[in-house]
Image (cartoon, rainbow, N blue to C red; front, side, top):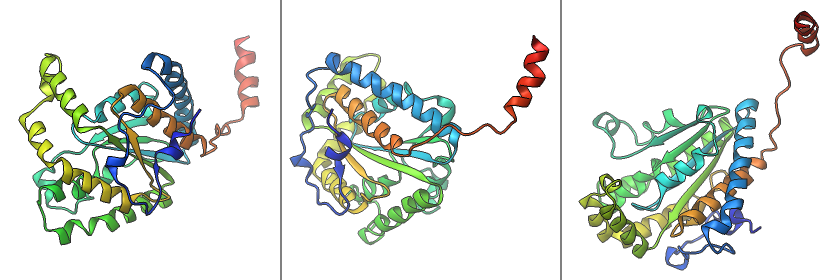
Length: 277
C-alpha cells in the first residue's frame, strides 16, 4: 500500500504551490466501498495504538486540522473518534478569540489544550489562525503577524522536546468548486442548514489570499518535529483514509509497549485466587 505519510509530507523548507496539488486525488482506490476494508484496518490499529499511548504514558499526540470552510475538519474529527477511546482524547476548537483571550499573547489560549502525557489532542483550527485569518483580513500589521511563524515553531519545539509530543498537522485541501458544492448541499439539507452562513460565501472572495497564506504556513512551519501534510480532500473517504494511515504509521514508529505491572502478580494470585477457589 502507498505510504501517504511520505507522499503528502511537506518537507522542511519546501516551497509549496497549492494549485499544483490535486484535491481530487484518491490513489489506487476506486471508491469508498472498495477502500472501506483499508479504512477499517487503520481504525482498528489506531485503537490499539492509542491504548498503548494511554497505558505507557511516555508520549502524547497532537493532531492539528486546518483548511477552508467545508474542507472537512469536523468530518475528520468524527472519523478519528470512532478509532479512539474518548477517555484518552480531547478535541479543542479555536474560533474568534474572546475579549479575555485577545488581551493575552496569541498562544495563551492554546497552551491549556495541548495533550498531557499519554493523551491525544485534536485541534479544529489552531494557533495558525493568527497567520491565516489575521493576515488575510489585515487585522493586525504585517510586522506583528509575520513574527508569529518563529514563535509557533518555538512553541511546537517546546511541546515535542519537553513533553515528548508527536505533532501531526494536516491541511485539508479541497478545490474551490468542491467547496461551493458542499455549501449547496448544506443549503439543501435541513439537518445541515445550521452549518451555513453568509460569511461562508463572503470568504470565498478571499480564496487566493488564503491560498497564499497557507502556502507560507506550509513553507515556514513544516519542521522535522512538527510536519505538515497536504491531504487531498475532495473525496471525504480518501481524506479519512490518508489521515488515519499517517497517524497510525507515526504512532507505530514510537515503538510503544505495554508497561510492566506495578504490583506483585504472584502475590495477588496466591492471596486471592486460592481464596476464591
